[in-house]
Amino acid sequence: MKIKITTKELKSDFAKEVKERSGIDVKKCYQCGKCTAGCPVAYEMDYMPNQIIRFVQLGLRHEALTSRTIWLCASCITCSTRCPKEVKIAELMDVLREMALEEGVANPKEKNITTFHKAFLNSVKKHGRISEFWMLSEYKRKRPKTALQDIEIGPQLMLKGKLSLTPHDIKGKKSIKRIFEKFK
Image 1: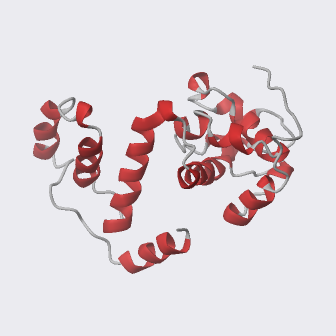
Image 2 (image 1 turned 45 degrees about the horizontal axis):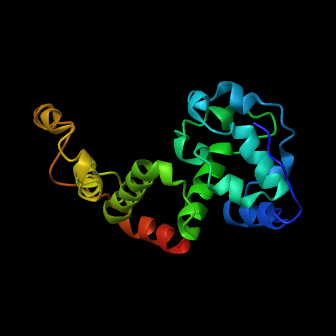
C-alpha cells in the first residue's frame, strides 16, 4: 500500500514524544523486517509492524494512531525478541494504543478491541491483576450485542475453576494504582 506523504502531515516531535512516554528509541530501527516476519497476526494488519515504526520515525502520527495494527497486536513479544536492535515493538504498540485513546482517534473499526482493552485495564487497575469475570461483565455491558454469545461456556469454566465470581486481589495493589496514576 502506497502512502503519499506531504510535509503538512509530518509531526517531527512524534518520535521524541513516543520515546519520552515509553523509553523506546524508534530511530534504532533500520527496517530489517524481522518483526513483521515473525508476527503471528501480521496477515490481519493494515500496516506491518515495521511500517508502524517507520510512521513514528517519519512523524506520521495520524497513520500510526488510526491504524488497525496497534489494536491487533497480541503483545506476544515475538517482534521484540527478534529485533536485532532491541526495539521493544510490543511496548511501542501499547503506547500507541494509549495515545490513540487519549486523542480519541482509535480506529472505529476496532470498537470491540478498544472496549476489551479498556475493560482489561480497568480490571487490573481495580484488582491488581485480571479478574476474568469482572472484565468480561464490563465488556459485555458496553457491547450488549455480544452479551449472550459465550453464555454456554461460563458454567463450564466455573466448574473447572477457570472463572471465579470473586476477584482475587493481590498484595501490591497500591503499587499498581501508582503505576496507573503515573501514566494517566
